[in-house]
Amino acid sequence: MTGGGNEGSGAGVVLDKVAFSHPGGAPMLFDLSVGAGEILAVMGPSGSGKSTLLSLIAGFETPAAGRILIGGADVTDLPPARRPVSMIFQENNLFAHLDVAANVGLGRSPSLRLTREDREHVSESLTSVGLGDKARRLPRELSGGERQRVALARVLVRNRPVLLLDEAFASLGPALRDQMLDLLKDLQARTRMTVIMVTHDPQDALRISGRTAFIEEGQVREVGDTAAIFSQARSDALRRYLGAGSRGR
Image (cartoon, rainbow, N blue to C red; front, side, top):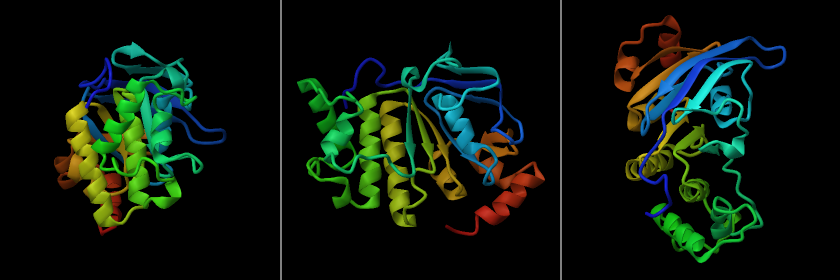
């Protein structure tokens, strides 16, 4: 698949003593390094700071102290639009009045003033996610899994080296979720983008991520090989979490 100058590479992500707190909330302090081209799963109890971690990387939240580095560059003070990051949420953020091709085309141009090359990239991206024959459908005419495929196609045309997913497949049934995870892993293998994926399900992490980070009370408590961290959890908090989180979907 074609896609521009950054194709074929991800970018490392570093949170260096990043401090943050929501109004009236407990302080958070994140230290984390993610390698270029790595798939990292992020897990933890509700309210532990998983989504906040992604928002800090994306630039939707501003740290009180510390640095955020992407590809070795300090992006701490950059607005979201200037960061080399794409993000997919559970809601997928599609525009109901635009067809599939237009929703993907927004990743190339917010005004949808697309060149011939842009349209070719949109078509290639839709083919890559198995929607090449549904470019003219509206979001309401798609299944939940197909709508998330549109969101993935939009990521591909944006061609950013870092992809953040915040429980992106949580609303899907088990079989469809596995399909989406396999598609994500395949696309990551081809583009080598860096993927940081928040999930509540250990099976999601085991399926596609080489490493997993466990967050509790606004801090990264454990990080390591995914299979090892689940089988040899060092902290009581992670053992408690796995006891509740691994009994099925």
